[in-house]
Image 1 (cartoon, each protein chain N blue to C red):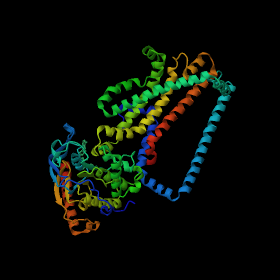
Image 2: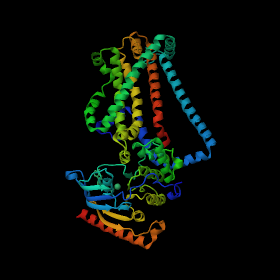
Image 3: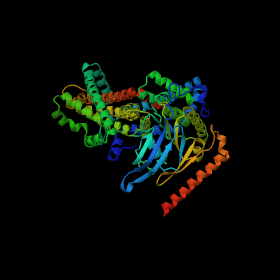
Image 4: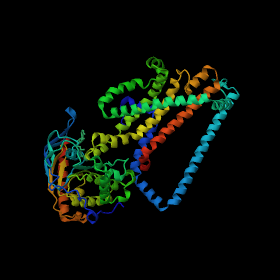
Length: 314
Length: 284
Ligand SMILES: Nc1ncnc2c1ncn2[C@@H]1O[C@H](COP(=O)(O)OP(=O)(O)O)[C@@H](O)[C@H]1O
Ligand SMILES: [Mg+2]
């Protein structure tokens, strides 16, 4: 971990996956011999081994999945009880819609075209903002990691702008951008941008110097070193940043869609609030949660082929 | 797997299609001084050293850790430039790292995201050779280090000794005139290290390449080298330049021969005298 000064604490806030990355690095070194031995065993007993491990995986996952499902069921039931008995212990459940009402509201919306338009509009905003943030973030992060000047130029902006929450940008965004759509996408983009920049920077910085030296002595040019050494070395960290960025961009989208006049799942949620339609608030929240999770999962899935070597290295 | 000694001559001639220009790999170090930092932080890593390493020679740089062995080697590799003096290889001044000088590091320095084959083919690839050429060079060197079966594995799936063999193969795939090795077997267990030393001598014999090999192990230096350079610390300089009179090919059994033991004694005495001097200097 070579991030200096203030930024190291800043990174920790939103980047739990990083610690996973670095721990596998050390496991690699320690586990070399074991891997070879396991491999040999696999070759000797292929069928038995595959079968045994498949059973083990199913068993493990079945247990974990059933515990998770139970946990959800219990949670929803507690929610139901709290609303049914109108619990009022400091936190007030009197106006909270019960799960069944939320479900029926959801079911009704599923039959209406508008609901899908809300989702589609939000996803389109996410896509535009996120892809722009990904390209910008990776380019800026790499530049900062490889050039001290670029780093000194960009760092103060990151330090000042990063802690500003998306909501705080709304007034200025409205003033700056000619269209409502532009300001919403801008706010969403900002949310995704910082984690992507910081993770890219971190990944570039932690590229082992010995690998850069090796590439140099093998005759690689600067560009080739970037392409074959720095980028792949930074990729685990970049992909962590991309996943975090996706989560944050949904988060920011919701804030941005306060200003939306018509569509978007965030607008749907705010609109429900102003119309005192309580079940729809929860429907909107849950849809945002699901879409956010699914798109983060999609990012991880998309990055997987590029990180295949890491799996093999364990 | 780990303990086979590869005999090159049986199956390949690595020089096929790559005629070595005779007499290349001549290293000249002239009055080199290397200093790090400035002011109070100033650190003389290497002081006024001159060396002439002949083409095809196997030279070991021997000395305690921190005495400037890596720094001196890195000046030949082109990673550090001397504060004073000159380093040249085949009459060309060294100004930076390049494919004419292969480098093998102590730490595993293979690209973890590339397969063994792609690691070995990296040099030819960045030199712009065709995929077919890269493939055939990779095959040649995979065979040379006895790792053909592991071509499609990733580095972390190999043992430490295998990884270092790949490191050597990768450096040689550029057909350099000089091979620079910085304690390449330092992290290996004693058994594997012996096998690796024999492997290396076989490869060297077939390539006729100049090797500069850094180590802090007296036995390793004598077993491998034509010439042992002993370095002393603070400030780093070469204090002895000893010919190794042992015949080639070397055999591990030579480690108990008269000549070997006598030379070992001499080396140890030099190192000891030097450490004592350094110790007294520090305490005065
Ligand atoms: N890049 C560097 N910057 C500052 N000091 C260095 C650098 N590289 C090596 N040194 C110093 O130079 C001296 C010799 O180091 P080194 O050549 O690595 O020794 P050895 O390889 O014999 O163990 C040490 O005191 C070390 O701290
Ligand atoms: Mg060293």
